[in-house]
Image 1 (spheres, rainbow, N blue to C red):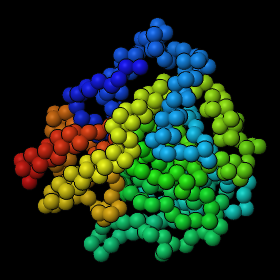
Image 2: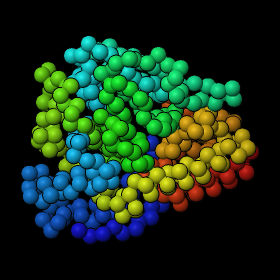
Image 3: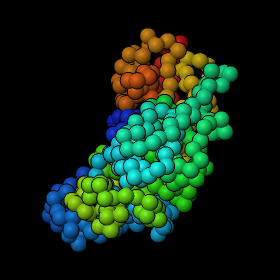
Image 4: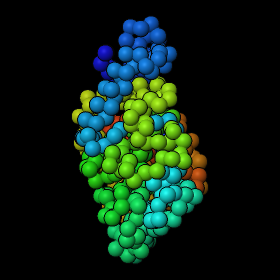
Length: 370
């Protein structure tokens, strides 16, 4: 297969998701669009049962396992739908038949959506873990001041909240299974897979285009799951047995994910992505904290490395900021409608150079309007 070529876009994309893909991946996909592997057809036009596509699927999983050091103890699934579908799938199979409760740690909109869905299937202990310090900054509790469940069927948490810009470092201690929504942080930092019983991640931030969700699940967890009343496509064990091809998978999304995984390996893997995430977020937070023109309400140690939230001290400048940013070919900076302000999502595909361009623009905007 051909290697990746470097391609520079006129715009720098800071969208929160669907988010930008590596430009080298897009160019590779463009080159292979009409003729994949000499077949005279696009990869999206051939059977997922063909020898060529089966080889692609196996290589994709192998590359993903290598990137995250996933051993045989865990199954890897490439499933239809977004992470929101897993908000239902997880409690449907684990909680609905259990006398135990499920423990959900709440630190933002997406964890709240997950708990709202879980309550439809059983008893839930929802724990608000956001606190405010004496400086007025928000941070995430270390759980020592929380009413924890003694013996939950599982503990669910969202290590990176894209809207509020929170980051949770580490894994909560629990007597239940550990389940994490890593949609916006997967492949951006080194993790120990053995610490997790189930990880799920929508593809549209660090993996590929929307339409596919990756699930990493400890095989021993299958024994605690009840699949009797769930649709077959929600049956994790059956999906594992069928190698994520119980029905026709999202073949093009799978293909693009395979290119992203190859690209990540060429870049030096997850450890290199973590180093770049620290560098990129540091550049932005250093500017935001410099003099009060830009504001971030999160305590330093709890700030997201993927989604840098900020506000202008004078909100009347918001529209002008976005308008001038667009003219400077900086897109996707408008904050989520629920909290307003600005947000720069700096997933793996966003280069250090792109962040430096954004920082330079922000400095110039401050000089003109401060």
